Image (cartoon, rainbow over all chains, first blue to last red; front, side):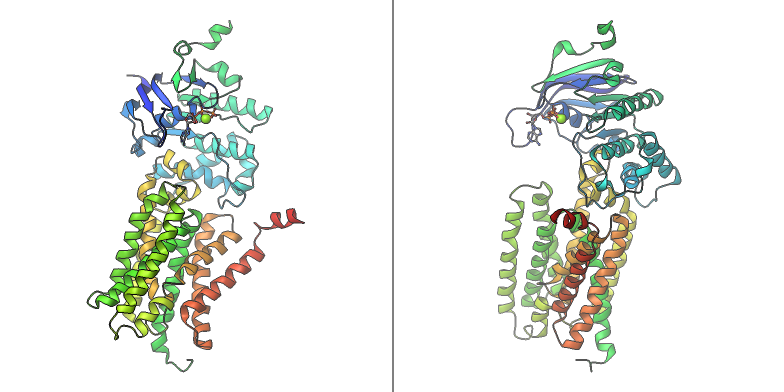
Length: 236
Length: 276
Ligand SMILES: Nc1ncnc2c1ncn2[C@@H]1O[C@H](COP(=O)(O)OP(=O)(O)OP(=O)(O)O)[C@@H](O)[C@H]1O
Ligand SMILES: [Mg+2]
């Protein structure tokens, strides 16, 4: 009942492909858990995250988030899920300011015919400040560096105040100092808000150390022994 | 043509301003969402529809134009939406077909229709606009304003990035088709002023100019209709003074505005610097 995420025998095939990108995957994560997803390039890690928030349709099995079945039409449910995509880069001419990119993360929840509330703007600014990007708030997003853009997108995810956090390589493009800071920030938000967090990462660091579980994905399957493996215990 | 009394050209002036503002507002979507090919196909479909309306005589060309444009959006929209590689070439094959159909319909149209009415479908007309056309444009403009205010946040989120918008819980498909249908209707209604051949310039160029000049999408939505209205106003004046078809005059003016925006654009500076 406490499962925030539950996948039962899920398979997913990309349009026009013959081999499934995910094959018979079962996985569940409880409230408050931090789950690391690792595996080689092309293993299906990104696919796994996009199946969980329903951006990708599945061909077999069932995905449930917060007790509700997930489909591509689960728009309301997605308002509880914040997703940071793996490669998202805005070209220089992109006509949006950084603070608007963050604020827009909250738009779906506000609903049509309503203006963003003062509280929404405050949350957006606070999120930018928390990732150390408050000085960038009025800059066009496309004129920021890759790492700066990453921080703004992280702020967007934070400002959404989700219950489930899906992060696809949150630390790419960040310098070593920023990697440490952002990792600690993600951890503190995860704990403060009692979130469930699934993240994909290729690097060791505070996030991986703090994960209750590490799930290894290889060739569209979860390696059986990889689940329920508390890293801290192993290290000790 | 300057001798024409004001009350005869006034509907055209107001109509051009409304059409200029609406086309360029939809252009803000079309340019950013890379729907140019689709917009092009829709405007040619509207032309073919209007021509069929003239041919059938009993049907209002306006409704036929709308029907054709909306049908084009419905049929071609999914192609564009899935951003299939061949979408542009398929859509590219549609608009010459629509053009050809339109011309065939016109050639069969009853001789009464082939005067000003038929030609204005192609080139636009200063005299072809009545107050009733202006009312229709005004109703559409009011509708557009309400929809843009009501769903503005959702539209902006989609214009930033469709995938991010979908991930945050916005039903992007519904809004995508809302944009397509609004564009189709705006194109169909504006057709009689600029004509089917050049309406596209009024949709794309003022919006592109606004994008050249600004980094904030909210300001783009304010500047684009101003530039669209300016294109329409100066185009209208040029057509009166030089006795040119109004569609061509508006196209010339919007092109000039676009060229000026490229020269002034802060977005080009880096490129220019790099080229040295
Ligand atoms: N849009 C797509 N169309 C077809 N196949 C795809 C698509 N995206 C991914 N795939 C395939 O699905 C499989 C899993 O891809 P996925 O992006 O989930 O890998 P990943 O584990 O995230 O890899 P990486 O570490 O490189 O990000 C790969 O074999 C890939 O070729
Ligand atoms: Mg990936």
